[in-house]
Length: 364
Image 1 (spheres, rainbow, N blue to C red):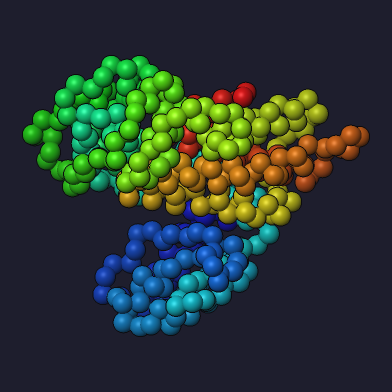
Image 2: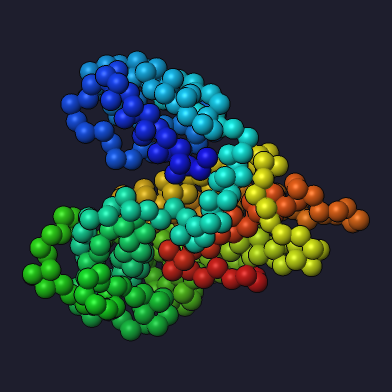
C-alpha cells in the first residue's frame, strides 16, 4: 500500500464511521488525509492526525475519535495494526509488501512522484521586487504551486537583468495565457478575476551577486536558506566534497545512476521487493516526499524542498555500497530490491532538483 493509497484508506474509514452514525460531524468530511512517518513517541509505518482534525466537529475527544476509526482501519486490506498514541494520533503498520509498493509507486510516477491536484482550482498571483533572490524564489514557487495543481500568475517589478534568464534560467510561465513569459511580464487587471491568493515574494535579499557561481550553485545558495534568513554567497557552494549539501545531493543522484549502469553490466535489473524493508530511514523520507512538496507549495517555502533533498541524499548514500554483488556473488532478490530502492531515491532527487531549477547530472 502506497502513501497515496493509505491516505485514501484512512479517508474511506472516516466516511464509513460517519455513514454508520458513529461520528456526527457538522462540517464536510475532509477531501484528503495526510499520512507521514511517525513522529517522536509514535510507532508503525505511518501516522495521521485525522482524529485531532475531526474532534471538534464531532464534539468528542480526539482519542475517542481515534478509537472509533481504529476498527474501520483494521478491516482494510494491507493494514496489520493500528495504535493510538498521544492526544489521538493513529499509528498504522502495514504488511511487509509496503516497502515494495512505495518503491513501485515512486518508479511508476517518476519525477512527478509527489505531484498532486491538491490545489486544483486555486489561482495564485505571485509578485516580486526587482531583486535576484526574489525572482528566483518567484520562479521556483511557480513550479511548486503548479506541481500541486494550482494556476499561477507571476509578475515582477520593472525589467529584470537579462543575465537572470541566461545564467540562472529563470523562466516564468503564466497559465491560461497561451504561452511563456519572462519574469517582467505583467498581468492585466482583468486577469485578477478569480485569483484567490495574492502573495508578495520578498525573501531577504542576496548580499552579493550570485551569478559568478553559475546557475546550479547560485540557485542553491538562494533557495536552501529559509526566506527570512540571509543567504551566503560564496565559493563554498562550488566545493566538491561532503561539506557542501548541494554536492551531496547531486553526488547521491549520480551514484544511483552509476549503480543502474553497473547492474546492467552484471546482468540484473531493479525489482521492488520486501528485502528493502531494512532501509527504513530512506523509505520514510521517500514516503514523506509528497507531504514535503505540498508543504513547500502551500507555505511558499522552497527551502523545505532543498533541505528534504539533503535528507534523502544522506539516507541513501550509506546504503549504496551494498547494492551490487561483491566478488563472485550472484545477484539475488535482495540486490534487485536494493537497486530498485536506490533508483527510487535517485528519482526523487532528480525530480526535486528539477523543481528547484537545478540540473541532476548522471555523471559527477
